[in-house]
Amino acid sequence: MAVWSIVRRSNLGEPKRLDAEYYRPEYLAYERSLSKHPILREFVVKILHPVEIKRAYEEKGIQILLAQNIRKNFLEFDVTVFMPEAVRATLKRNELQENDIVMTRSGVNYGDTSPYFGEPSPLYSCADDLVIRPKPDLRSGYLATFFNTDAGRGLIRRGGYGAAQPHIAPTFLKSLHIPRFSREIEEQVDSVVRSARNEFKQADTLYVQAEQMVLYEVGFNKVDLSWSAGYTVTSKVASITGRIDAEHFQPKYARLIRHLEKTGKAVKLGDIAPKPHRGAQPSYTEGGNVVVVNSQHLGRHLVNVEGCERTDERDYNDNPRAHLCKSDVLIYATGAYVGRTNVWLESMRAMASNHVTIVRPKKECDPRYLAVYLNSPLGMLQADSWATGSAQRELYPEEISKFIVYLPLPSFQQKVADLVTAAYEARAKAKKLLEEAKRKVEELIETP
Image (cartoon, rainbow, N blue to C red; front, side, top):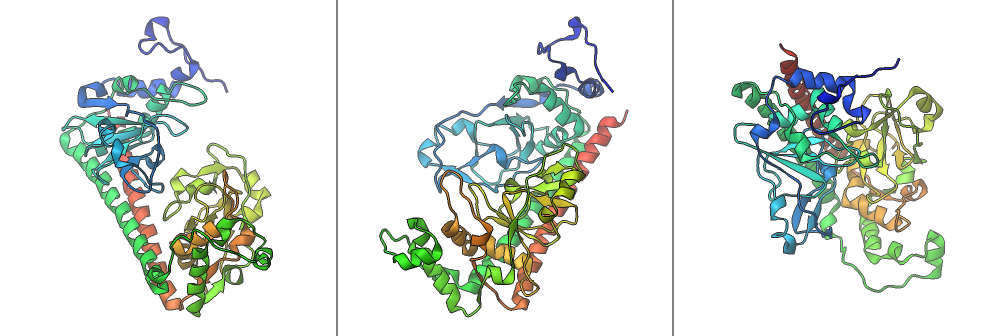
């Protein structure tokens, strides 16, 4: 059924938009429902577009907030980048202050918004973000939560301009009507968002603890991982491995494998998890009832479930090998972060894309332990060794089967697994708190 809006020329106002998308009925309804409230311009010190400089990232220096670090009401550093200390003065304008709000300025996720509560510090925004600096009486957790409600996101989407690469402009944001309530109510919402932030931090702490336990158990600190400038490999060894690239034979990888084998508890992954296989690429469907996990949803520690795409029943039924089962181990198989590994702990119907490898270990290997092991340097170094390609790196299932896994006693595996479960539960609690904050603001908006 066709739906349309009729707008008088005299009501076009500012900005002068003639595109039909701008006048969608739901956008007009959001605008009417908020029209009694003041506009954002009254409550902000500034909304700034950070300066852009040539992006030359390094392993350490000043930390940069990327657009992909901004989630819906929280920050997540699955990807962490730095710029050299020499550009600190140039980027002074971009330095975030506690109580700032950051928003993705452009791209498919434009409008994603999160408060910045001062950690990590210092942190400098990249030019793909917008920084909203509210006055002291407006809590960033409250304002960011509004921008993540249906009304807030709808109005931001309304203001997007550009087709292939949509953007949001500071001038448009300043003109938005923002619901204001008592200081006590807004502080309550802000407090809930801060509690969620603490749960996210707890999840990270628990996972890191699990990883450190594994590294200590294996004696990873005893492995010589220094880079060898020159080395030789016999043609026989090259023939056996089927590789002739120098990177694969970098001696530090061989030293790691020898160390693992000396423990007496080393096994091939293919022996404890037969036939790893990739998922399938479905057609994405807005509002679909099946979750699709692709490589970009595999986080530094846990799957970014809330960011996953959706597909429909037909694609799901057509690709049974790609179906995910609870406790599947998922490996990033194509792209910049090959080898990154998460365990799937959800019960919802889901499938893996063709850039994700599914590993299902036997009973003697707890999948939560295996995911931590493979996601640690013990697994990532082997991924670096076996990956192929340059512009687009690939890690194939048959190569993953060759990984060497340290398989400890079940009691130790359980300790690691318990920490992973606790981290997952803390993250779930954080997301629940954010949903509660969002629902609270929506109820306030709807109350006459």
